[in-house]
Amino acid sequence: MNRSKKILLISLSAAAIAAMLFLVIGVAAPAFTKSSFLSIAASTTTPTPLPGDVIPLKSIAGLSSLTAQVTIDVNGLINGERARGDLNAVVATNDQDESRITVTGSLLGDIAAQVGGSLVGLFTPSSVDIYKVPEGNYIVVNSLIPVCVKPADSAATGVLEDMSPQSLLSMLTSSDVARGKFVGQETINGAVYKHYVLNGAAFLAAAQKSSNPKLKAFGKGLWKAEDADLYVDAKTGYPVAFLGSFSGAYEPLKFEGDFDVQVELTGINNDPPITLPKSCNKPISP
Image (cartoon, rainbow, N blue to C red; front, side, top):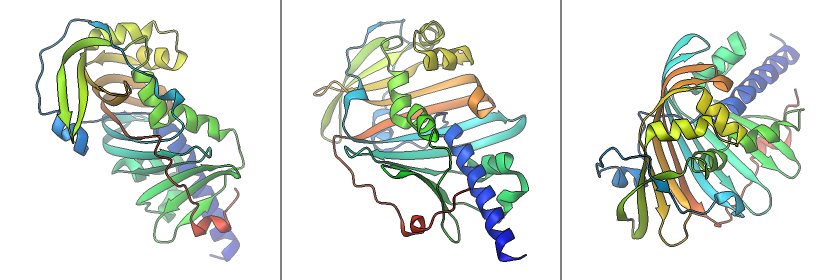
């Protein structure tokens, strides 16, 4: 195969993976691997709550910078094909309007292959990084040789904003659904958190009637929502972790089945540095 054909195949493959990731990142879902925070917090069992009262918390929308992560575990069908596995996304944003999302997990290759077809055979990605910086968006496919792609469509940033972990946490803790029973204060890693349990049936009913179009669409696709755990920082009032299980359909991912969601806010106003890798000095522009 000559060099020009190889470059074309690499461009098409990386672009296909990028398109998949813009859809996948916002679909939260696990039987999960717990993070250090929730591995400690989830050890406490709680009774099934009634619909509950309004949970007092602050929206994370006003934070200038943060770090957060989503763990996804799905068991069902993607595009009609059997799928069981996990996806993990870690996001960092700073007050220079820069962000980086790193995606890993056992489903990364499977989903990419369904979107990109045989061209994805060129890659066995171990992870994919998505950068948003003032000069544009970049997707880095980390395989044997890192490949950096600069998408031609600048509107892709809108998808990143809508489906990032912080947007997901904002949606799942919006005022329309943030109702539950207070079950106690817990000290985790030296900090105090208020633990609430949200009634799954009440969450589902409220989501389906929400004035938030994204939350309403999410709720309309669900068949069932289990009771969920929400942790709120007792000092700042910010939601720091959400853990829930759902059954249903999620149209952007073409998914149907059972999925668990674990979202954790790991840093607030910490202004993490975001630096493009050297592979983006000469990115591919499909």
